[in-house]
Image (tube, rainbow, N blue to C red; front, side, top):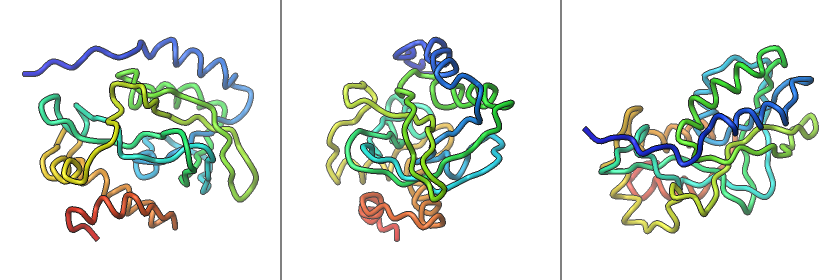
Length: 196
């Protein structure tokens, strides 16, 4: 049985820092751009469509547990710098904010891969500052440029604890469409394997 690689960075101090930056005096906002849109795993008081400038959703993060294995890594979304990204923001009442952040850390930050940041998200009711999980291109979990053949192979072979990379990508596209969000790049990737 393969061992999990050690975390890249200890997530605990990063959680402490995020909690301090948030401060707990206002409701917590969280930006979802991938599976958080369709499986937030927390209660929220409000959800709004949101757009972040300067970042884009990319299926360019290796997943060696959830959507793949160390021998056959899968892919999950990261938020990479450049461009813009449409997703959703969730508002969590301030009384539950610290608990929700702890839950999010257990889900998203176990391996210390993401760089949590507070990003300005533009919504129909004005801008909000939300917690977002971004990915550095310097991270060993960033795939770099993948060819169409590599995507096809990953879509056909990669499967982890929560299922296949293909299911994850298709489910995200489905949910984006449900929220009237168009992701042409993801549509094109899924067409490689005959998914419409």
